[in-house]
Length: 325
Image 1 (cartoon, rainbow, N blue to C red):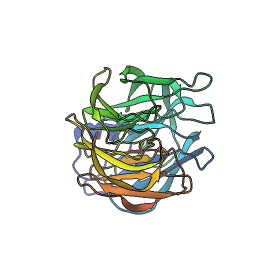
Image 2: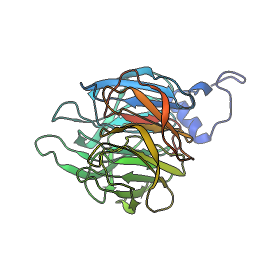
Image 3: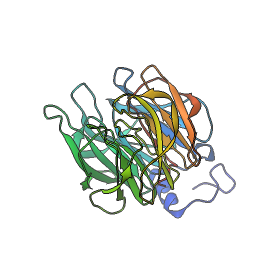
């Protein structure tokens, strides 16, 4: 246990305290706003994991490695643990593996279990402090079928994912955002649709219509950008590259509203993460290592935050302080 007056002293939620005990990961105050960006194409498939302190600006630092080079993964996270699911490991191949890290430490991933289906391209992730959901994705050769499945895990344990329900329509490279109770998915490929749909995270069910994006698109930012009240969807292919940032009020329903623009246009899946104040986006291209930042509660164009250790695209992002926690 931390000693009174030591570097880990403070007041914690009981729910968080149990996770710190289970994962043996007592938080240092300087690490409370950690965001991690995983995988990508450089253009070769990458196993790189970078991390940043979301509450400040600056360049990313090496965190560790995925078990293999992957791109187009999904990810979910609690305040202590991050889980990366699926992804492509070749032109026509992918994995069904789930792998996890303890966010407040650094190191390589550990096996968690398996997704219901192998998805090589774009399961969208949402999560609260207990449960993580992976929605949609593109299956591997020979079918290359597009799936509407949503599966879930209990983040604090390990094991295979379980069926949650179905999306309104099959698709991949959706964006995901959430509050502590509601998960919201937006956009789609194929078709570059404008559909926004939602679920209640702690139940199981099919999605329900939420509203529409300002512009229909797929390949939206992969990772939770949320204050708990407001959610952001960044980038996407319309089918041309875009710099669009939209926002919604998560616990109501309705159409998205224009927020502002990323610093560059992109047709890649942007790596996305946040704390409850600041949202970060990166991975606009394999030659662009820049990280963009916006303040979630306001509207406006993105500004420079810092740089990734290596420029790459098709990244996934997660954090220990996003709006679902």
